[in-house]
Amino acid sequence: MSMLDMNCTHGASALAPAEIAARLAGMDGWAVADGMLERRFAFRDYHETMEFVNALAFMTHRQDHHPELKVTYNRCTVRYVTHSAGNQLSDNDFICAAKADALYAQRAGA
Image 1 (cartoon, one colour):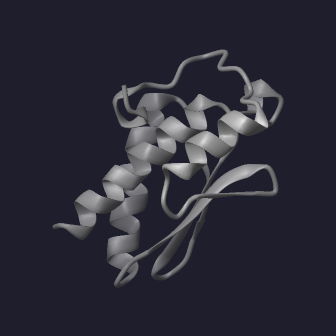
Image 2 (cartoon, rainbow, N blue to C red):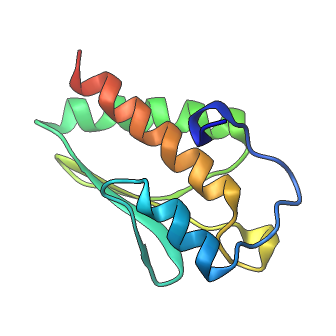
C-alpha cells in the first residue's frame, strides 16, 4: 500500500534512520532539515498559494496531523514532525507529505 493510500494513526512510533532514508528516497523534493520533513512548494501567485494552503489545511485536519507552514506570496514551505513520537519523524509525516504532493500535483494540472 502506498503512503498516499494510508491514513495517520494516533500513537505512531518514531522511525529509525534507515526507515527515514528509505521513505525519503521515494519522495521528490522532500528533505530532512532540523529533524523535520520539509518541502518548499512554488506557485504562480498569492491566490494559487492560498488555494494550496487551504486544501492542505483541510487534508491535515482530516488526518489530525498538522504541519508547520511558512507562507509567502508565491511559496509555501511545509514541515512535518510527530510531536507524540518525541518530536521525531513517523509514518504520519510521510503519509501527509505524500498527500501534500498529490494536492500540489492536482493544482498544477488545474
